[in-house]
Length: 419
Image (cartoon, rainbow, N blue to C red; front, side, top):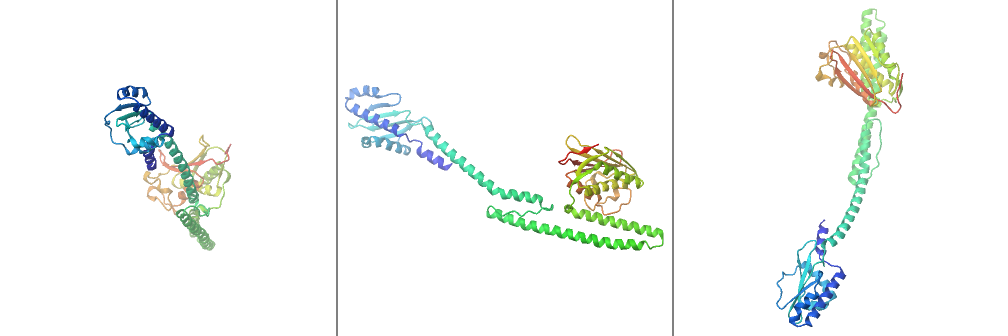
C-alpha cells in the first residue's frame, strides 16, 4: 500500500511522450510566430493559435503565477527534451484544479522579453495513469494472496492430521503422525506422538491389570462357593451364596465399566425386539409384572453383548424399584432413529438428581424406597454402551409416578428389518 501511494505520487503528473512532443511543438511554433509579428498584431495571432486543447496568451509584463511544484519537474524535463530551446526561456509549469482532470498551465519568456502564457486542459488525466498502476497492484496482490493461501494450507495440513488423530486417541487407534511443517509444528507433532504412545501404554497396562484382577477376584469367590456347599445349615448356605452372587456381580460391573473402549466386540446384526422381550420375560420369571409392546422382530446393527448388558441393567433397575415394568419399542422413525423406553411405577428420582444417576459410583438411596446393592455402575455402564452405539439416553419422571428411561439408537448403514 505504501509503495502504491509513493509511486502514484511520483508518477501521476507524467505524460506520454507523444503528448510532451505535441506540447513542445505548440510552444515552439507559438513562440516563433509571435516573435515575427508586431506587438499590435500579437493579440490577434494568439487567438488564432488557441484551441480547446491548447490556449496561449501574450503579455509584456510577467504573469502572476504560483511557484512551480516539484511534482511538475519531470513533465518539464519531458517537454524540454523535445524542444531544448525552451530551457533558456525559464519554462514554468503549474496546475489549476488538481484532481482527475487537472489543467496544466505555464509560461515562459520570449526572446524580446515579453511573456507567453499557455494552458493545456487535457494534457494530464491522473485517472488514466492510476488505473493501470492499480490494476497491476491488484494483480500482484491477488498473486501474493494465492501464494499465501497455498502456504497456509501447506502449513495447516499437518495440524489437520493432528486434529483428526487427537479425536481418535484413546479409542483403540494409534496413529503415528509424520513430522512435517515448520519447527513449531514439528515439535508439536513430536510431543503428540510421544503423548499418544504413553496413553496407549497406560491403556494396555490397565487392560492387563483388569484381566489379572478379574481372575484373582473370581478365583477366591469360586473357592468360597465350593466351600459354602458343605455348610449344613441351609439358611446360612443360602445367605452365603447370595453374598457370593452379589460380590460376583459387583466384580463384573466394575470390570465392565473400567474396561471402557477396549471391548473388542464388533457390531453385528441382531434382533433388538427379541432381546427386549426376552429381558421382560426374565423380569416376569423373577416375580415382577412386566410387559413388552412393539414389533415381534426388528433387526439392527449393534454390539450384542455390550448393548444387552446395558438394556438388562436398565430393565433390572426398573424391576428393582417398581412393581410393574413396561418396555416399548418403536421405529424406525422418519429421521432414522429407533426409540426404546423402559418405564416403572416406582418412586422415581428427584429432578435435581436425574443427571447424577448416569455417573459412576452414584447411589441415590434416599430417593428410592428400597435398599440397593452394588456399586452404582448399572446405569453408568448402560449410558456408556449406548453412547458407543451413537445413541442417546434420557431419564425423566412419569406424571403418574415412576421413572422413564428413553433410549434413541441411530440406524446404521444397513436398513433395519421389521416384522
